[in-house]
Every structure is written in structure tokens, then in C-alpha cells.
Length: 349
Image 1 (cartoon, rainbow, N blue to C red):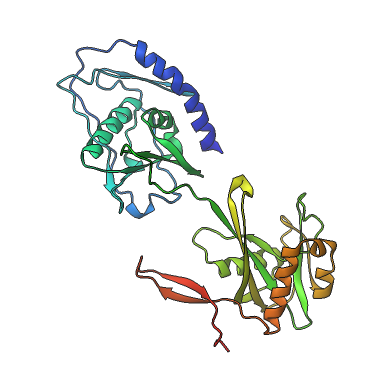
Image 2 (cartoon, rainbow, N blue to C red):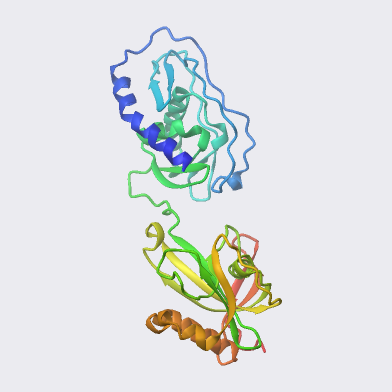
């Protein structure tokens, strides 16, 4: 939220800065100087992940005959005379991606507004001559003043997370082929049944439609977390019960949920390893082992056909009348990494 506030403040100044840019006479007799990028060393593979930003300090030193005025709510860029023969503008530090695109190193962005604007323009011209296509620009929290400059040069917002905002630029004069921002969130639910045919249920602290409802423990998986491990973790966090994964019994796909994203919910059959309940009082109002008939006897399950069907499928799987999906760890040639493939194995027994 802090970063987005900084982006909004900076954007409010962009229109004012552009007008002043047109009105300001160009400086003559600029001294021969150049800016240099910060020390390299940012790992290429981490460019699209959330990383903590290097602490950067703004510079207020005039650059190439222009000036940089740092204000509380944004930046004021006055362009120098870029036609000066003594001026040397360096391109931004970047590397190629696998799709004829460019990924800019966020930790090497120039500190001053003028330096960034000049380098960005020079870089875009250079990449266009080289036939490059998509450009990815990650601006860290402490660099938020650079956002309106990039927007002015034609960049668009792609997505934002804690600590950064990602901008993109499509160089060819054709519709952009860059992938859209993340559109799905993934949830997990754990169906845990003991030998008394009692299911582990929780009552959440929320003013939503499920308030007061006894339901399965659910939650969202973390980044780089597998579906079944997310289900095991959520059950442990909410109820204190340890479990192991048996099979994935069902999933549902809903659209236009939180922030208009689509939502996937995977329901996993888990076997309890412990039975004592200790609730997370920050999220959960209560938790208990409940007879399955009492669970589905609630009015909610009589009215919600999808939730009722999920419970029916879980019970069928528990009674060996239905085979869900097991998780098998395999190596993919695409990235050479181990990942889980979920599939129905009728010969598992």
C-alpha cells in the first residue's frame, strides 16, 4: 500500500512536470559529463519475483545542463540540450529474455530523474534497432518517483506487489503479445475424517456469507507452495491437527471473485495423525470434530449444491467408491525441475 501511494503521488505530478518541460528554455554550454549505472549483481532469475529493494538515495545534482528538483509529492524533470556533441548517454543495464524481449535490471537504474529519462529513451531506440519486442521494467519501492517518467515514455502498468511495480513496453507497431498480469488465485481445502466418521470443521471469524457456518478448513496457498502441502499447512494452522495427504478429490473454478480475479479451490483428502484441536484465534472462532451427517444437515449445504457435492465426493473417496488424484513428483524437461503431477491412478491399491 505504501508503494502504490507513492506511485499515485508521483503520477499526480507527471502532468505538471511535462508542462514545465515544454516551457523551460534549454540550457546551453553543458559540461561534458555522464552518468554511470550502479554496481551490477542482481540475479537474472529473480527479476519477476518479489525482492527487497536496495536502499537508494535521491540525487539533486544537475545533470548534463538540465536540472532535477526533488519535491515532496513527485519529481520535476527539466530536459537538457541532448543535441550537445559533448553529451554521452548510456543505455540501461538489461538482459534478453527467451522471447526476443528485454528485462531491465532494477538495481542499476540511474538515481536522478534526468539520467533515467535519457537512458530510457536511448535504450528504447537501441532495442528497437535490434528488433527487440517486449520490455520489462521493475521499479522498486524507493524508486517510485521514476514511475511517471516511464509512463510518459509509453510504459504501461502490468502488476504490483509489496515492494515493487512492474511496467511493460511493447516496441513493435502491432498489438502487444506480452502475457497479461496474474489472473487467478489458488485456494485449498482439507477434508479430514477420523475413524468415528467425524469430519474436522471450523467456524471462521468473518462477516461474510459463511459467518456462523461449520465448514472445512480452507485458505490460500503461498508462493512456490504445492497444492497438497498448502492444504496440510492450512489445517495445521487453523486447527493444530497434523495430517498427511491422501488424494486430491475435486476442485472448483469460479470467476470475478476478489479484485475480479478467477479463483481455483482444490479439495484434498487428508489423513489425521493427531486429534487434539488448538485453534488459531486470529482467524478461527471455533473448531471441532463433527459427525458428517450433522455437517451436511446445516441449511447452507442443503441450499449450496456445489458444497454439498464436494462433501459427497469426499465421502465416496473415503469409502473407496471414488478415486481422486494422487500426486507424483516428476522432472519436467521444460525447466529441468521436480514438480508434482496430479492424476488418477486406478492401480494405486
